[in-house]
Image: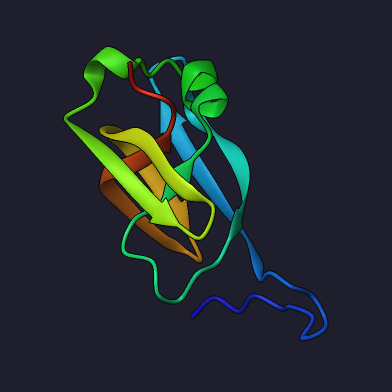
Length: 99
């Protein structure tokens, strides 16, 4: 079991993660906001670019709705993602405007 400490005074719970990609098979360390109600992981597009992923690899266009409006993005399959001691292969949502 992995334990992540957090401050109850903080607005966000921040956890560590790692994402691997074609240009960095060892992976890049990430700081992620932990959302207990989320069913997707959102990664900034600059990080995916750095790891060798490309928007053309996207499998689906997505729209995220929040109190500030609608944000367009896409889902992309990644080689490996790890967070809280759990490895996973699968799709990740990317926040990026789609024209």
